[in-house]
Length: 528
Ligand code: G4P
Image 1 (cartoon, rainbow, N blue to C red):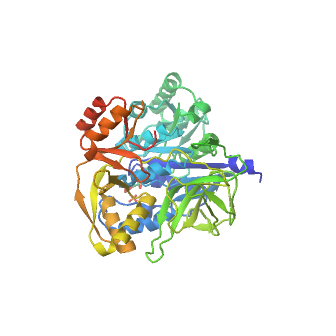
Image 2 (cartoon, rainbow, N blue to C red):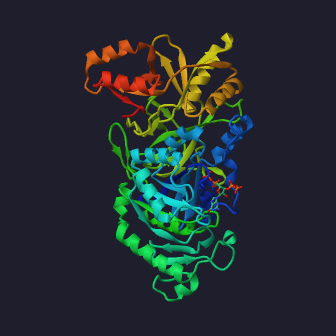
Image 3 (tube, helix red, strand yellow):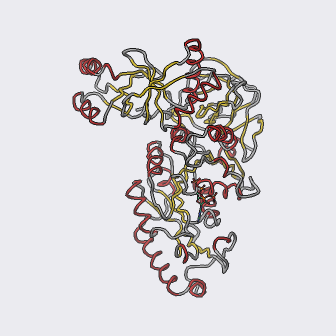
C-alpha cells in the first residue's frame, strides 16, 4: 500500500468522559465491531474502581493492565483505528491531558441522566485548547434521563459547543423505541424484545413511511416529526470543515451497553474523523506526508518488575515511516538511538513491528533516558509543541528519610517526574523540593514506588500552595519583573526544565499579585 494511503486510512482518537458515563463500555463495543475482541468484558478490568484510592495492589494492577490497554488498535472497513486509552480516574487526569497531545480527534461520552459533568468540562477544555475535533455520544438512552433538547442546550452552555445532532432518540428509558439517524436519514428501531437484551434489531425505514406509525405508535410518531422539524430549523446542518475546525460538534444518541447507536457512530466517525494531522513544532509545522520520520514521546510506562528498571516509552509517529533498527536522532540529548524491538499494540496483545506509519503509536524500550515531550527525527532539530505541564492541585515538601540513600532518592524522583507521575518544583530560596500532583493518590504512589523500585524512603510535609503559575514577562519590563521576584522570593521555584514558577498560596494573593504586576502574565500551564 502506498505511504499516502497508509496515512489516509488511520484514525487515531481518544474517548473521554466523566467516570461512569460509559467510556469503557463504548470502547469495548467498538472493539467488538472491529473483531479485535471476542467478548464483552475484555476491557473492563483496567478500570480503577472508586474507593481503591489507597490500595497499592490496585494501583500496581492498573499499571500492569494499562500497558496493554494504552492503545487499542483494530481494523474496520479498511480503516486502521487507534483508540488511545485515557484514564477516567481524576487523579490520573494529567495522563489524560498528555494522551490528548497524541490524538487527532476525540469522542466525548455523556450520561443521559447526568448531562455534562465536571470531569467532562475539564477534559473538553483541554481539547478545545488543542483544537481537537470532537464528536459527542449521549449514552444510556435505555434509562430515564434528561430531555434530549435540554442535553443539547447543556452542551452548548457548559462546553461552548455548536452542536449538530446527527441522530435523535425516539423516546427514552422505558419508552425508548429507537433512533432516527439524521446522518444516514433512516431509522433504527428496537424490536419486540426486552431492550436490555437487544443487540441487532435494525428495521430501517424512511421518516415518511406510513408503516412507521404502526411501529412506534401515533404519539411517538408525531413527536418524532416535531423533533426532527425543530432540529432542522434550530441546529445547523452538518459541515465537515466546521467539525474539523472545532466550530461544530456532531452529536449521536445511543446506548453502549445495548449496542444501540454504536455502529452508526463508528460508521460516521470513520467517514468524518480526521486522518493524522500535521503537528506544530517550535521550528515549523510537520506534515504526516513528509518522507522523513518524526515523532514524540507522550507517555512513559515504568516496568512492573522492580529488578528491571527499563521503561516503555510511547511514541506517536507524526511524519514519515518509522523503521525498526534504524538510528534516529533524539533531539533533546542530541544522540542517536535505534530500537530493535519496537512494539505495536492491539486490543489484547503487543507485537514487534518492522515499520509503522503516521498516526500509529509504538512502544520502545527506554533505560531511563527519555522524558515526556521528547522528539525524535532523522536528524532535524524538531521540538513538538503542545505538551505543557498543568498546574498541580496538591503540593507537599518531599524529604529524605534515609541519608544513606539520598542518591537513590534523587534518581527515583527524577525518573518518576520524567514519567509524568507528578511535577517537581525546586524553591529558589532554599533549594527544597516540592512535589505537585493532580490527585492526592499520587503522593502514596510516589512513596511506594521510591521505596520498592529505588530503595529510597521519603516523607512529606505540608505546604500551603494554591496553584503553580508559570510567569511570563510579556512586556519585558525588567523593573517590574525584578520587583516581583524580590517581593515574592519565598514563593518562587523552578520547574524541571528550569522555568520560573510562582507558587501562590491563595487565589486572593494571586489576584493581588496580578493587579500589582500588570505587565507579567501568570499561566496555569507551562506552554503559552
Ligand atoms: P466509564 O468507563 O466511563 O467509567 O464507564 P463504564 O463503561 O464502566 O460504565 C459505567 C456503568 O454504566 C457500568 O455499570 C456500565 O455497565 C453502565 N453502562 C454503560 N453504558 C450503558 C448503557 O448504555 N445503558 C445502561 N443502562 N448502562 C450503561 P456498572 O454497574 O458500574 O458496572 P458493571 O457492573 O456493568 O461492570
